[in-house]
Length: 176
Image (cartoon, rainbow, N blue to C red; front, top):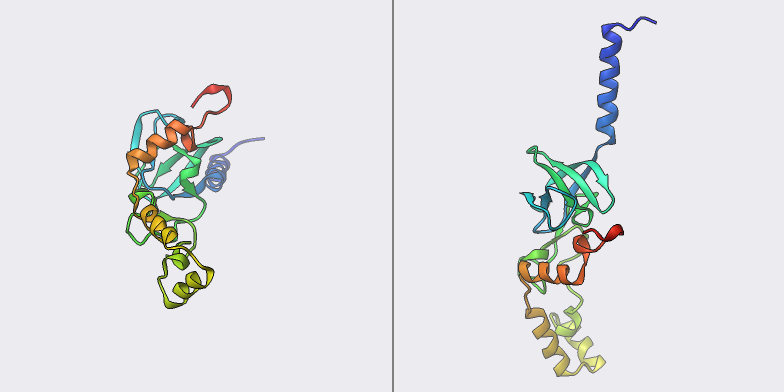
């Protein structure tokens, strides 16, 4: 069988098409996401990647994905920081909330309401509901204190490291 240039060209194009189809698109869904030089939370940062950035997964290493940005930056990202769909809704409305500015955007399609709305009496109906349920004033005050608490990115990162949570969790073989 004689292999011609056109046959080689067709095979190369076919290989490129299969490779392109195999690459997955993901979107950054967590504030503070960075590409890392290795599949480890403690490795060197390659680039900061803002929420909503589309990345192409070029390799999967379990809980870590090797990804490339549209700008050509390539590195490892913790799988829990990306989603299969673009982030759709800003949940906190820019007020910071319990986790400060680190969790202002989310891929969760939800309203800007929070679970405390009924107890805080943000509408006449919810005020009446809390009154009918006999919600003590001390609960309302305690909830307000919790809702005013802000956690910085640094505090959140320290918490995740200390608790070995998310990208800081130990994996098989004792490596991070």
